Image 1 (tube, rainbow, N blue to C red):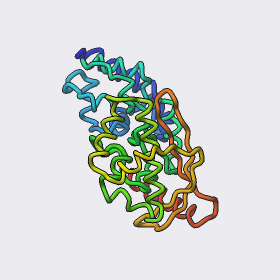
Image 2: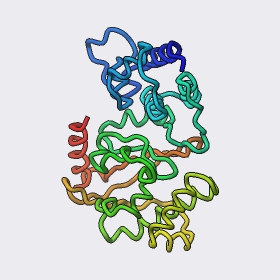
Image 3: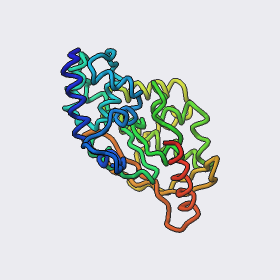
Length: 277
């Protein structure tokens, strides 16, 4: 671990970011460019003291999880993320296996959607980043670990994962998720994270095993999604997608027909989401 170079690298990247780049207001009292340390810490999900000590060359040896969080918080490119790992004395993550680094361009788009439910997911159904309204709508899907990181896995192993969806939609949703996993498995092959996910589900869920044998294929059209939210009730939402092929990630944006009851409920969720920040 090269403490001096790590501290210098973090500082230069922090100073290069502007508040507008990460969806923060500049404010009248900001006299210098760049982000403050506490802002980077918040964006990275760590304490200000922890981050400050890294910049001051007196912090602990950061784990791979902390480095990945810093890379997201500082909106680093893949090359910059790899450099960060090397400075901290870690091996460079395998890009073909670890699809957990959000493209900086995708993050810039997400940062500007502070009043809209939106999130970035990878091809395994793992949520990498969410707006506050998305957390208010779906819950914090970034908190899970292991196989549970995948919404596809939770759907077939955790009954609570289905509570947001009306019962009449469960069969369709199950088939759609299996189709997505089939596509991921076909692309990544044996020995991949997708294969490990599939093997675990085949052993644990008879429903998944039955659908897997049927080889469902994802449809090109995404019908409206129905939710039963514990605070605002029933919603009918449309899910627009922006795909980043290089990263195998998708930006999901949930919208409602303007003026509809669901549109009004989304506005309320945006207020609830603002209170979570």
